[in-house]
Image (cartoon, rainbow, N blue to C red; front, side, top):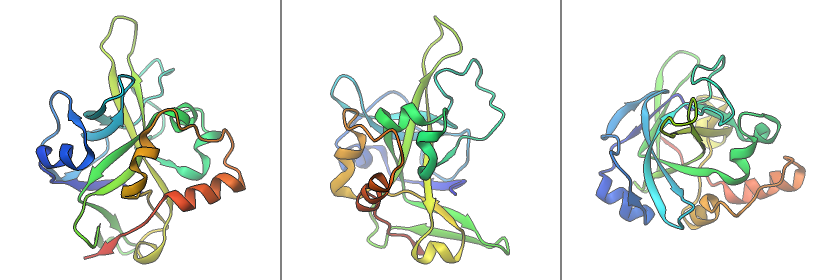
Length: 204
């Protein structure tokens, strides 16, 4: 899973790294980002521009009448997003990147571990997003979730789930809204995910 992460990347470096335009008030750098906090997301807008924008870290489905859900949505299992009403639409066309400098996870003995990229580059966490508002006339709110998958490598020694990572050379493909996923997480889709998602966690 991913219940805490860090992002200390200065906004000017972040927008340059992702070739994005900063929208509004981007969250300040933090080493302790928790669910329901404001987080930075990177996504392609309908205007054809790549945006770095603040989002609420707990995805609220666009069809929900309330922001108070009966279940947490800060993480979504990549294996089942097409079977979950809360995530299916976003998985098809509303994918984003959530920049991080590292993620935290706790083992069975409640010992914290910090995972980061060995080469020091930002981690591009795979995410989904929605635009939500309580009723017509209210301002739209950007909300997001971090995708998780079965752990591999060092991460598997700490926890059975880890965030999905998007390789640098596949960022454009991931955030492009016209790249539609299959409506079923079939064997072919599983193989496609394995080819897209690269993992480079290091325990410090």
